[in-house]
Structure formats: C-alpha cells, structure tokens
Image (cartoon, rainbow, N blue to C red; front, side, top):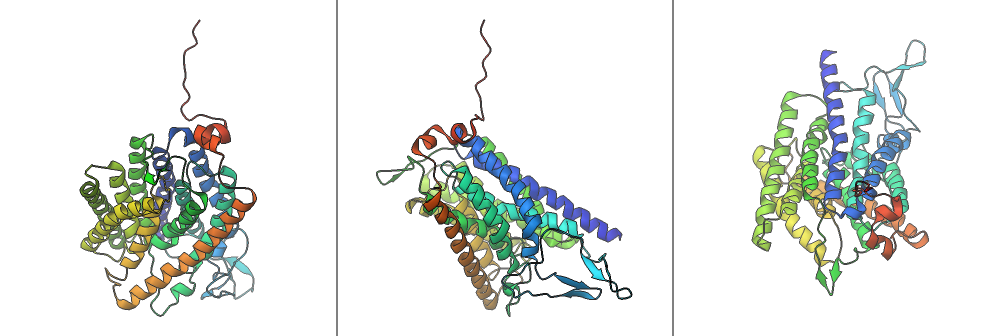
Length: 427
C-alpha cells in the first residue's frame, strides 16, 4: 500500500506539471505574435483546457480506452473492441468487478498497481488538450474564434481519443507483430496536433503582409522574453509529460527518462542555434527556443528506451531539422506564426521513427512498425481535420475580415485590450 501511494502521488505531481505546460504554451504563443491579438490567444488557450477536460470526461476517456468495458476479479475481459473504434460508455465511473459470491458489482480496488482510476483519467486528460493547443499557435492572428472552438470540440472530443485508442487503448497498432511504440506521444499527441495544424494553415491562408511580391516578410512577436519563459515552463512541464508516462515512481526508469528528456532538449537547442547561425549569420533566439522544443518532441516517443548518447543524437538531429523545416514551410508560402508545424509535426515524425533506429528497440521490424504508425495517424488526422475545417470554411467562414485582422482580434472579437494604456486623470 505504501508503494502504491508513492506511485500515485508521483502520477498526480506529473499531472500538475503537464497542466502547467498550458501556461507555457500560452506564454510562447502570445510572445511570438503581435500585441493586438493577445486576448484572443489567451481566450483560446483557456477554452482548450477547460472544454478539453469536460469532453474527455464525458466521452474521450472511454473512447480512448474502450477495451475496459467488462471486468472480472481475475482481470480484464475485452468487450466489443475491434482495435479501431470502441466506446465504453458516457461519463466516468469507478471501475467495478463482479463479486463471485453475490454476483453483484462491487468497487474494483485493484484497477492498477501504480495509480487509481481517477488519477489515470486526470493525467490522460491533460494530454488530450495539448493537441488542440498546437493548432492554436499555427492559426494565430487570423482565424475566427467561433469556428476554432467548434474545431476543438470535435477534434479533442472525438478524433484525439479515437486515434489514441489505436495504441494506448490496446488497438491495432499495439497488436502488430512488432508493436508500434510511442512512449509519451511524439505521434499520439504532437503529430496529431501537427497534422491538423498543417491542414488548418493550408485552408486558412497566410496573414496579411507575410508574403509580399513573392518574398517572405518577418512579422516579429511582441514579447520575446515572455516566449522564452514559455519555453522554460514547457521544458519543466516535460518532466511530468515524459516522467509521468513511466506510469509509476520507479526510481531507475523515471530517472533515466528525465535525463534523456533534458539531454535531448539541450542538444536540440544548441544545434538549432548553431545551424541557424551558419545559415543566416545571426544568433536567432527564437530558433534556439524552437530547437529546445524540437528536441523535447523528438525524444518523447522513446525517452525510456534511449541511452544519454542516443538522446543527444536524437535531440541534435531534431535541432537541425527545425531550422530546415521552418525554412521549407516559409518557402511553401505556409504561415505558421509560432513554428508549430516544424516543432510538433516534423520533429514528432522524426522522434517516432528514431525509436526504430536508436535505443533498446532499434531494429528493421520496429522501424517498419513506426512507419505504419506515422502513416496511420497521418491518415486519420488529415482527413478528419480537413473535413471539419473545410465544411466550416464553406459554411460559416473561418477567417476574420481584413479590417479585423489589421486592427486586431482583441478589439473586434473580445472588446478588450491586453495592455490598456492607463493615464492619470488631469484636472
């Protein structure tokens, strides 16, 4: 019982750290965008975490883990779960078992040896909202708030948990001859958000002034110190994101996971800064910051399987990828204000494939399974996000007017100013 309590407390601490990451995302996003859209971005981020938790409670958790429909004293009996789509019912309820003496349902006190049912829900619920937060940054400064909220409801409420069930819910990717592996979500969380971000940016178009006469125009963020604080908060939150994915307080596994996470982040940042300097002849702090995030996303799929050297190599490659990915996205005339596609999609794919190249699981068969996983998630995310956003584009519209975009979404959609100019009344 003492060990169970320690494990459960660690999981709750990690839950709090992942929750704290939403502040990091908010700071990063508002820091890299313009002052006139700050309230809009903060509103979206608050909506994502609040609505995300409610949706995950009502339908998401039981969509993501549909196999736990029936239980017995001797373990779980799989219900009508075909490995692709299943549903264990609406809402949350304490897991029950059948008392062999009375035949009645009683509370299951052996849900998991590492954590309670309620801790499991809350930890997984924190992950669910992250996918939509990734999209928020990519569409910043020009998407209508209403259609974005509708997108969040459908994507977080239905698409994310269904996709998540394919691996973490014991679905078909988990039952391959060589199971697909994604420790903490390079694909299941980050690229799920990244694919949707890519689709949304394509359908939405670039911000006014981003591309002029075929040339790329920089649109600087209004508060780089705040963006820097956001990245450091996200790095701290990753201790819970990856450390909690051990699903216990096992000293050895937790420690190595945190070490590989930090080393990949450090390597990603340093290499991105060096690569950017060699290419553009300037010390770009924003590229440094995105390199750190790229390293974190890259190590997330196999943080528990890598040696420190593996982690440094994975992070370093992610840091290099970031610089070229940001450049490629610009050349394709895709406008991503915060670099979400490069960080979460491109580095998410890299981190997922890296499991088959580095670490304890490295093999040809594992690499093929990782490719199958990447392709599967690309399919469901591209199709679903395109249908959601395209239908809204053709019906209610997804982009604000030119006047609203130029004057700022804060004034037009919220009637507020994030930084009001207070002056003393003169008498």
